[in-house]
Every structure is written in C-alpha cells, then in structure tokens.
Length: 407
Image 1 (cartoon, rainbow, N blue to C red):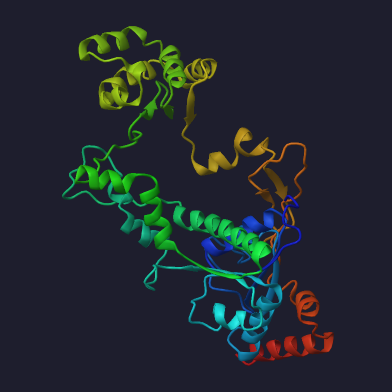
Image 2 (cartoon, helix red, strand yellow):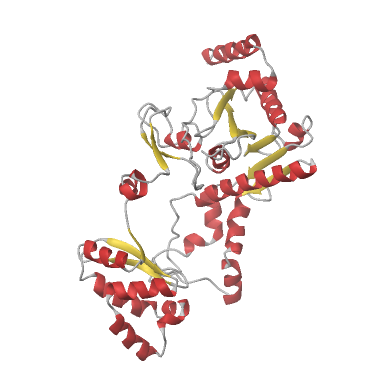
C-alpha cells in the first residue's frame, strides 16, 4: 500500500467483482475502505472456490486492506445504519440498484456533497454480468481457429472477467475525479457506470467499432495471431509453446536475427515485392508465409536454446504456462516485489498476495494487508462514525444473534 489517499474514507456496499475491485484499488493507495455486508455475508461471500473450511478465496483477495461492517440489511434498522454511514462518510461505491434503499437521493438527503459511484448492468436498466456483456460485444465470435466455418463455429468465451476488472478500475478513477471536483467546487456527484457501456465503449475506443462499420462486415478469425501486426504462438522441437510479438522495427530485427532467417525472409521479400522492415502492414498481410518460416526454425530447436537466442537479441516473447505454473514461477511471483506471502488471511491459507500494482521509486510500499473477517470492524466503525455507545451496539449484536438462533 501507498499512503496517497490516507485522508479518504469510502463506504463500499457491493458484491461479486467490479464493485469490490474499485474499493480494492482505492484501499491499495491508502484509502480507508469500509465494506458493509449483510450480517450473514453478501451475495459473493461464498463465491467459488472455497477452502475446506468454507472460505472464499475470491472474497478474501478482492477485499484486502478493507474494514468490514456486518449489519442486518434485511431490516429497516440495518438499512438505516448503512444510509447513515454513507452520508457521514460522504463517499460511496456500490452495485446495489438505484431504486433501492441505498439510492443516491436517500443518502444525499443528509449529505449534500455526496459522491457516489454506482455500477449498473446496461444503461437502460437491464441486468448484466461480465460474460453476458462480452457475448454482446462481438469478441467471442472473433476468437477461434482461422479454418472454423463462420456459419457453424461456436463463440469462444474468455475465462478472465475482463469487463468486471476494467469497470472496477474505471469506477475507482471516476470516484477520485468526482472527489477532486468536489474539492474544487463543493459540489457532489452521482456517477452511474453501466458494465455494458464499459464493454461496448471499449470496443469503440479501441477502433474496432469504426473498423467494422468501415469494412461493412466482421473481422476474420485469426487463431492466436495478433491482429494487424506480426505475432503468434509457435512450438519448439521439444514441445514447448511460446508467443512472440514484433510491432516495432527493433522487435522485428531481433526476431529475424534470433531465428537466423535473414535469407528466407529476403527470398520472400523478392518474391512478393515487399520489405518487411516497412512496418506492420506487409508483415500482417504475408503472415502465413512468415509464420511457416519461423515455425520451421522453432521445430528444429529445443526451447532452452531458442529462448537464449531470443533473450540475447532482446525479443518480445514468453513461454505459455499453466496458471499453476505461473503461481509458482520465480520471475513472475517468487522474486517479484509486487508479492508478499501473507499468512494472516481469514482462510488460514498462506500464499502470495499483491500490493498496489503501481511502483513509486524511492518510496516503500507496505502491505499487502489481509482481508478482514466478516463484521470485524462493526463496533469500531459504528462508534466512531455514528457515535453509537457500546450498549447500543451490544443491543444490535444481541438482536442479530437472536434472529440467527430463531432460524
């Protein structure tokens, strides 16, 4: 953690991925993020995968460095407390519906300069989640081998819920932007960020939407090739698969030198009347012939020898790993200052955990802080923020215990 936001407190009432990610990124920069859940845990409290003790590893990692308050959010009293906490704090991240008890209007009634960020599904109010907005974006139907028949080929979903994480990052940015505006003007803001808009808006920002409209149709499937540049997966003599990319003149020269393919490249240039040093366009258009040249060399070398040659020439490449291999890799994790092994996890399982992704030269980062236990900070926060006495808090806890025992 870096203490860049240590004067900022945020209430987070959320579940799943996008909304907790927004709070996580703020917490990693030093903000006090108070996550408020239902007393039995929110919708994501038991999200797969669970340890044998029943702890969610997803919840544990998306809520690092936060405080936890647990209230009976099915009762009027618990909901009033969450509204009061949000108003007292003045900054709110949530994915609860706008037409819920935690609407911006309800909180702003007692906090005129409230900044709230609300993650929605689609802009028109329809529900959505990462995998459904991804289906709408068009990307899954771009994926797959080149020789698949477009009429019968299935979509290829991505495993990473990328839109959730992009939305979370965007919401953290939007929150800080609105707080900066409030600091300058005294004016609060209600920000609604539809997950679907992040997806289709990113399609537009990437230029892909304009491309489809310009070409009047869809882009062809490319397998594992990079669109518009030179790059693909190859396989060595000993069966190692790796990815290379050459988007610059330096990267291209390094790859040609490492593979020792100057002569076959020159012959192809003469045959096709092109120069591959001219940029991405000729390399992409003639990619199949180029791929064959590079694969021929890869097939005649073991990985270690080819890896050494590519490293010596400064190529851009990486070996394919399983995620289990990645989690145990010394360069990626073991010797990476991003990670610290954390034993103070609610699950009791010790494993590497991350601090802020950003590095500030000359400034030491602390952490990573563990996730809280559900409700760990309830008494502390209610006393500090709302001035509740220990007796009043005790009454709340007693009522919660009684309601649980009645079930």
